[in-house]
Image 1 (cartoon, rainbow, N blue to C red):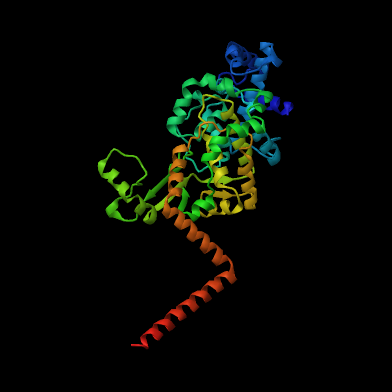
Image 2: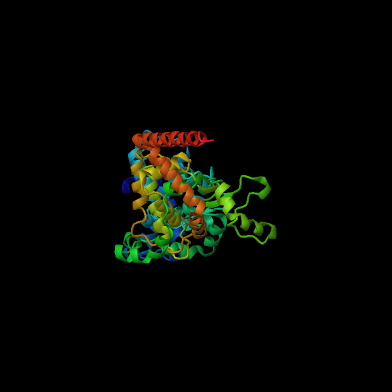
Length: 429
């Protein structure tokens, strides 16, 4: 791979914008000198750099890795670039492995280094942002609209850029206030990244409170009358739980929602009516599950675990899905609703993915605590219990043929007995 890195680097340097005929060695010296000017800034982005104490060697490492990444992104975007002879793009298995390695937390290099190399040595046919989106965009797995407000200049590295693309706008904006701190906590070596997960017993004790809150599966909520649907906020990963009334004279606002409007507060009197006759929906963004989904989510979760200043939005989403999905039936409920699109094959594979991805991960602050509190309130309603009991009875008697036949026979016998009793009583008059 080191040979391919240097080959890609020389290919990139052959397209130096200002002096296309400049010898490669001169270009390397010029760019290395540029990196050396920012070497202290680059070192501050890493937790440990003791393996490369020499500044020149450290700058050369950033040069080779940075040029390799840029050339790979550039070749991927160029439709006229021959893929057959390419050692990476021409081999699907190698390409997928390299793409996976580029997202590992320990393999990140500071974004400002990539931006400087891009501005120095690549013909401006595109932007660095577009190159990254074109290369990694289909790994997001969510049907998200690529947000224009997420810039490479305000993100720590490639993984941080993709992470921000999944966040609500207000959350991403707050994270970008202290970029250097984020880089320092995330651009770390493999040993530090491995420490982001606590031992099993420690993690279990610290997760006691979140696990007490999150405890309802998708099929359980489905039987309680909750309709799962695809979220409409296409530019972010967000969930919403709401109840709307089917009758126009009562309006369409959930009585559990808070509002200063006195006319809306009066609807609280009709809470039971909303829950019984309303339509309760749980909106979750659509997710397509591929083989690359699990490692991608794990890297985003590791990024949040190693960055104390970042809200654990992706971690909260993973915990939410882990809670909703316990069996293959839960996956099937979400698939029918369009929330999940499983490309792994069996539903059990998707179940296993979400049930293992949060093991030994500390949740911390649950981003969707308010939404889940609304779920708890709905489940405590009598109407929800009635709906759930009805759904369970319906599921049992419809799925069991002999039980269904026995119920029909009993109802028929009871009806005939009532008719016979009526005629017997009428015969005395």
